[in-house]
Image (tube, rainbow, N blue to C red):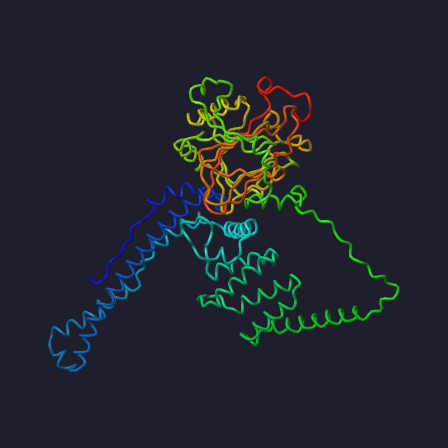
Length: 547
């Protein structure tokens, strides 16, 4: 028989583990760690797609062989139809072909080989990233562009520092970024990315996006920024490509009218008599040779520090920072094997501990945390409850000491090094940052205007922060303290520690800090927030407010 039912190998079992880990999650763009699951999902989809292509190719090959055979047969038969059918076997086979075999061929052509692929695609689509993920990833690129002062061409060509897997953006990619910016009325970024799309089209890149569409967005975004003359220039370029573009025709008239109006206003202003008006001599502004870092707005300071710019310690202050072997007053754990301690900053006092967590411990923590990662939350100062926030782009999970001996061991290590009670500390929080992952400037402790910040815990305020770096970051991802100009860069296997409160219990406002956007790489951290209760004899209260 010419046709028989064809079945594709099913990928359901292969995909099951990936789907189980994805089923409870969304906000993929907020965690690189969880986005890796999507790569395996896509790989399985490609496998399924190739199975479908092979089945289609097999079907077409059979149809082709059938057509070739009949092409040869009918060519011979039609040269002498009566003589050909005079052979009884030929007459029988003609009847059989038309009555049976052509029907089988019809069934073969109509057979659906898409079942396996479509089934897999349908099942997996419910776990695909959403429009929110795509928009979040796009806005992350814009955030990285601003923070690290990158031009659109640098990002589009993939020339980022330290990249291993270089990837270039297409015209469609640039256009998409421009459109997302446009929908947010962000005309500055709309111009940058529509201009990049136009540049790549001018260089000959093939695309489904045409120049007319790009020029339409580009001219309007430039007009919205008040540059009417440039907007007119791009609109005229648009009309050269599409002379019948109705909106462009109307815009040209409007732009020309506005430019003429501005010209007349300027002329009238220049011709006005200056009677009774005394020409004011411009006062010379006193400018300091070096702008005080403390006077720069926090956002600028934050971005400068993320780029490795900003305040530098004086040699005298730097000379007071040391590296040492530390045993915490001859603690039994560290008398024979003291740990390496390094001063990172003096005020506030920030120390880093080197080789403080092993690769095996890091992998175990990541293994425990990854299935539970959820969008990171912040304390709402109004309600005192946890909520998600756009200024914190990461996912986190909480690990308790009784879940695994590794967590208990790490808690004991932190207690031995800091001398602080861990029973009243929060559980170990593990965080993985997403595309352009960041946490904008914030305090770890509750301020006086947030009396209910940690009320539900009943353990007082956050007295100190312990932060493990569980990965190296290729570019970006520093922990910065904008008020004082400190920047601490991630180094796998190390941890940093600082007190959020003075010994008096008052908050140290110089500890306001931020996690810079991750430019290239994957950032994993875990932290322990240590609370006041239980520290009464371990860190006695100071006698003045800032002691």
